[in-house]
Every structure is written in structure tokens, then in C-alpha cells.
Length: 193
Image (cartoon, rainbow, N blue to C red; front, side, top):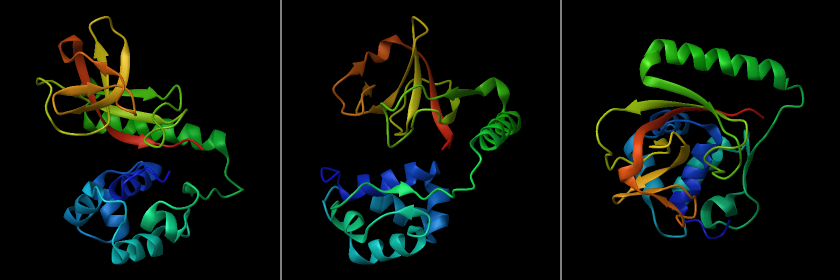
């Protein structure tokens, strides 16, 4: 994964947890603005102090090397899984949690979806459960992983940036924004391991 910028590596870690920026900043015990700065960095190396902070807070939960965090050298991080983990009980709990979230935040404005492939790893993986909040306005420039429903009713995952809807992680495939019938901004991701 050496091609990732330092900011993309920090976003990769946040995606592993499926957390919002605010929740991930709380986990790292830093202000959201600091995390936003780390995630926006375009240079290859992350500052040493940032690496120390992230590594000290995540290394017991994530298989990560300091070298990967600092410069992208080494194996990709992964969540450390407890061998006693029961996948079926966990899946049931995830579904219950998602249904509670939708009920609490407005069932008519949210959709629950299951990710059908790994095309968007590390943002979402096969089997992940996501919740999208309906955006009723025209497409906005706000970044965030979203689900788009086109005029034919087909669903696509992607990002809206610089006036373009990218439906490929490598940004080599786009969706005409005029064909977007509905956008659901992904607001909640639960990983099924």
C-alpha cells in the first residue's frame, strides 16, 4: 500500500473501525480538527508525533507497524480478531443495532444496505452493514462515502468530488450526476468479521 498518502493511511485506519471522524478523533483523544488535518495530508510521511499518538492508541486492536503508519512501508493493517468471536451472534447484534439507529434517526430518511463485494475496501468490505441518510437537496460538494440510486433504480457506491460522481475507488469510472435520482450519504458502517 505504499502508494497511499499519509492522509489516506489515516482514513484507511478510520475505515477499519467504521467510525465517523468525530468518533475516531475521540478514540485517538485528539480534536476533530487535528484528525481532519491528518486525513487531508497529501505528503507520503505522517509527522512523528501523530504516528506516536495513533500507534499507542490502536496497536493493541490493530495489527499495524509504525513504519506503515509513518511512511506506508510494510503490510496493510488489519483488526486483531479475538478467537472467541461468534460471527452469527455478532451479525444478529449488528442488524439489531442498525435497526435501532434507523428507528432513532428517522426510518423514512435512512436505508440499510449490505455490501455485496470488496470493490471499495478498505472503506467497506463484503458483508458490511451500512446505513445511508437520504440527501434531499441537489448534490453537494461534501465528501463522504455515499450510495447513489440512478434513474434506472441501480445502486452505486462512490464519492462526489469536484462536481463528479466517482463510482470506482481508482476514480476511473464515473456516474453522470444528472442521472442520480437519489443520494444516501453513508453515516454508519458496521463490520462483520
